[in-house]
Image (cartoon, rainbow, N blue to C red; front, top):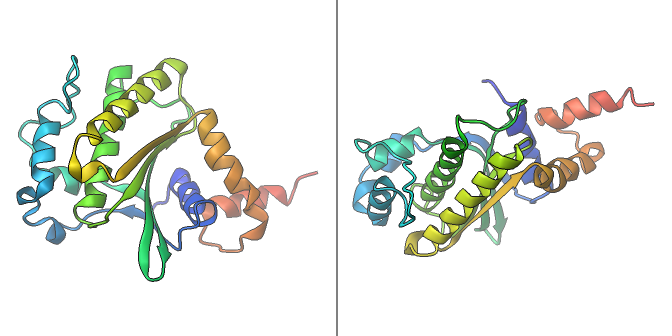
Length: 218
């Protein structure tokens, strides 16, 4: 199985910075747990998203008109999912979508990129509340290199997602974060690097590569 460096970094961040006891990368919903999902509370939310997402002057198309909720969720993948447990219960769930583009975050135009980020945030939130049946959670979109103009568009998309979620019962318990550019470095990369010398798990490929490079530090 191919493991992306960003996903490995997200795994280490969830384990050692956010203190999640259970972490999985590349989590997808199986078809069986999506049976009948359209009939639940997520169905109405999906219909609103499909019509243009919110009541803003400029609709943000996130879903093909012919797509079903089951298809949309089945296409989603959480790059890294962490569960923080206390007394046998999930105290906090954190889902991370991480995009590492060496030339800078770009899914097309600024509008297309911001729409893609909004889509990732909302679809992941529905996965947490629906198939995983979690009472609450945090959805994080992270990217290390983003141009100022694209960053502005992405942050605007984040605020639209937050505003929309605040009006929907099933999404009010989900919080949304975007960690890009300096925020990515300060909140994710730097904090993970601080833990590198204390981790001996060879499955954490990002941290193992850091340890290898540090063998030759002078």
